[in-house]
Length: 544
Image (cartoon, rainbow, N blue to C red; front, side, top):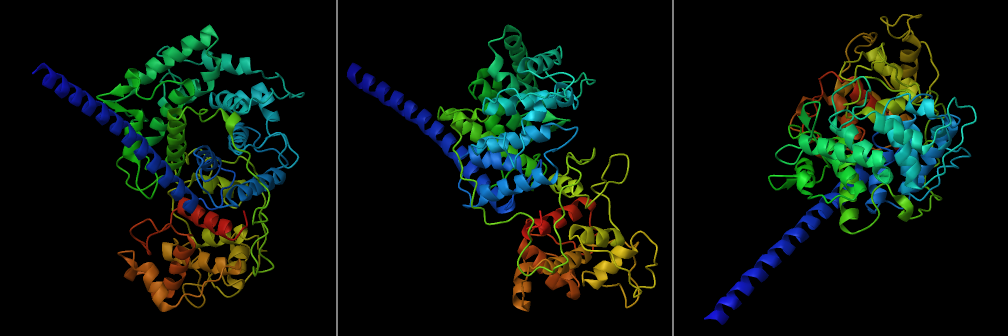
């Protein structure tokens, strides 16, 4: 009887043990599947990564540190774009936002590339200027430390700086900025601690915990984040539970070497990793919040590199930002000569170089098209609406859209007398004349253009499709192909017949986002949507 009981007890223990093992394995499998799927989605949607907050360095970092498969020329083409960008702005990525340097340094470090010689420029050098680095607030020293420590760069010397930076100065700045509750905020004037910047501060301080003051600051920061974690394991920023906050906390824990199921960060059996995966959308990356079912570019990129951090921690490899183990990538042999355009483009179509590096706007932080807006603004293809704002959700006039298309293609201004309502001397007359003469626009009637009329999505699609053909992009779609492409949208019959081929052309090339369920052809296009269309066109046409 005793032997039977012992055997039964042993069987139960073995069963329990196998259940725990299976659960852990399943968790690894789930994370791996989400990471692989997200990486595949990113390489489909970010085909030509550029220098930028979204669709650029963070995508490259996530793909490289997750060791995901990418097309053979993916990284070489990105590096060619970086070199072109750096040359175009004479090595000055921004005269105010020094996180621009830190972001590029990190992406290059993930590819095993030394950032001290990029097209002949040392991109680490600006981080030697203390005042200029901390000018933008806490983000400056946080990312300067993370970037410089990624490959253990020596502190760059800045002879013209008012104060020569040191790592210790940056560490002291971060520690001093900590709030009484243990958290940090982006702006020094704010007394409310924020999850994202608190997690980023901890990431930067991770390597300096041998200093008693830093060790105390880290512990207080962890306590703050633990208190801010909600009952489902997630975190809020600006009142909304979101993927990015989860991602930043995960990266912080991994950089600090803290278990992801540490009791301080497990609520009701749920961890930050569990919560992050609730934002995952199979086949389309991550959404920003749970109420948004469509993917968000920034959430997707941060989600990917957070999952990479998880898997690196579980397998005992270097953390996300400790890149001594980064594989040296051959960055030569890219298939594109950046900015050269495509064979068959019109001779007058020209590359627009970066002339205003680091340009941004105060109202685009949450725009899904942030990277596109910043990229076009850095080339002065788009401008703001005053007071440092872009007006991402504002509508556009037909004249404004025609102007931006002409500027994007670098076409010369021309006058036209075809349209009675386009008078010479108006700011837009030369742009409309050029767009008409190059076959990009037509009027609303034989002799009227309606320059101040609001442009619709189908009108914008038609203009961009004609511009694409001017760039050497050809796609002779027959009626059957047009129908097949547009049939996926429930409202495609509402597209005017004259615009259907052009709209299908835009969707086929990826100039318009096909993940939306509707076309909304007669709806006014927003400024942020316009920026994304033009950005996509220039990328496909090799004019970025």
